[in-house]
Length: 224
Image (tube, rainbow, N blue to C red; front, side, top):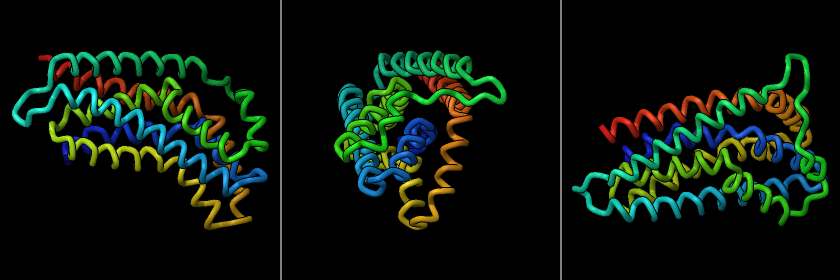
């Protein structure tokens, strides 16, 4: 299980640093239903990542069910395709960087966050964690890496639990700040939101470039 955790950990960190999700949970925490919606958002995030990860682990792991067998070639090809997809997204994010001194426009749905119910907060987190193209590629990549690293189903699922926990730290951190600092958290969260908003594209471009290159390198090694 150690190999599965070690190989998938960098990808989990990529999911952890998802500026859009962090900004969304910060906006909820400073809104009218802060604590309730923040908890619902974290739950939706965890469920979304865990669901996609479990499906991929079961699918890819089913083709690698012998402890002595090498992973099938198609799993390495899948990692290569996923890596190329991450590189394509990295280029897209880099080109979307705001001009120096300008503030990037926020998605329209962010304006409605203050009126969200807990159900809507859960649904938004599920979509951002599991359906958003960038996160979907990362979660599928991480789960495929786990499934390819070990043939043991119990070890795969154990490594996936670690992956989900690490991938959720970014969303959980603002909630912890809110619960610990109470009314004093507003200025801290506002500063975090402003920094994430300004640097969103650059952060994601660099992360996707590094992770995509890693996936491609691992795939080439396995295929050679």
